[in-house]
Length: 211
Image (tube, rainbow, N blue to C red):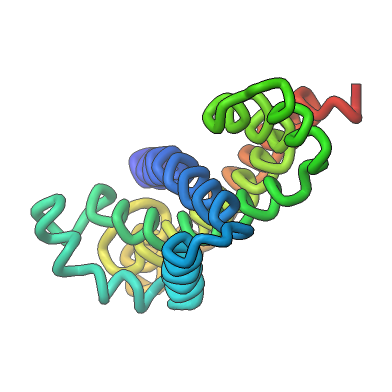
């Protein structure tokens, strides 16, 4: 049970780190290309937006099957916690990217214009205005995404990815042992509550409106 719990936590944390990086980059790209008058930038925005919507729409269990050949080439296997990472990342990154884009759009335009008037470069605006001003929303979105990932790890576990989902399905459901299913469920709920508590705590600490 402890090994399965650790596998679930490990898959969640590793995939969320990658999702946070990719999500911020994709969200920033969508935000920066939204209002451009350049035709090629508009095309780029449309293509990225289309791909984000497509991958957000594919059910996770189907996405796992679609990515099996890529997963095999990347990690050398389609079984185990490591094999679940590509599917977890690809499924959650577009979801988080939309949250990032929305968070950036909610920033007061006057703050950005003030930074531009003072001669701030594009990258300075990103890490001195966009990221700090939207950080509470980014952390809140990351918390929601992390909880979704925990659910995804359970589904991935049911087809051989390890973790509590695998334990509940193999040792619980297939062995007709409802106790294991119940215990695995309770542990997953505890993990969800723990990540939610951490996320809410961080939001309260960094949100200037609550200080």
